[in-house]
Length: 356
Image (cartoon, rainbow, N blue to C red; front, side, top):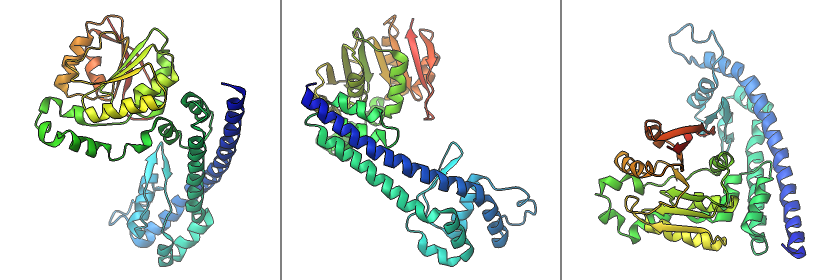
């Protein structure tokens, strides 16, 4: 990278880090509100439950503090506030939008709302989203001068922000909404393939989170002699990401749906990847004998997975990375020796196997 581009990258990094610092500050404020809310709301909801007779005839219902699920469930039951509640690791995340009109129904609720700072939560979340959008725009404006690998380096140095969406921006995956419907229509999927039960599951698409791919890469240590295959590669996200983050000799995706392959090759070309190739092929006929590592994220029916497995079983010394329910199959195969279970925040199994 020449001196001019180096200086431009420094400017981009400085601006992105400034925005990231502001997001970190907002996250701190949101965390304080959550802590106060979680500390004070059990007693409040217990009072409200008794007041409104929640619990029916059971006299023992109020002899303990309600759980997170019970308390928020009670909130919805009593007030119908329209919250979207997601429970993760015992914490509660909520978006307090458009609920102010309901507060006049109960002055005690209004007082509790204001005292815990919930009235600020919606504006803080909106401010955070705006800053995250600013980071996306800053990176997007840098693309004529910064290479995709440089953009990813900047993203990985961020402490906050939605890194998944930012990486999507680099790889072009923020634009695939609607691609499935248009692709299936273009290739007459609904008339030609819907009745093909053997490959029914192969037409389904599920995106692999980037943090999961990173966990895989940290455990595999791919090098210049490796040939990485994604069997059932979808829109090419895993293959393109692996090629950008490692120095593998070649990264290949095999995918049944031709519209996904067209998009994958287009995106690989857009980000300048020369060691990447996507092939539209029936997995039972495709040649992937030169692969050293095979990634499978449950793209096949049980019958097809078994047939693919029989081919893989002959490739001694290679590795398989399995994500999702396909792990149960490899766990039962004597030729697939599990060498590692990789921890990830998703509920999916993620394991690495040696073919012996």
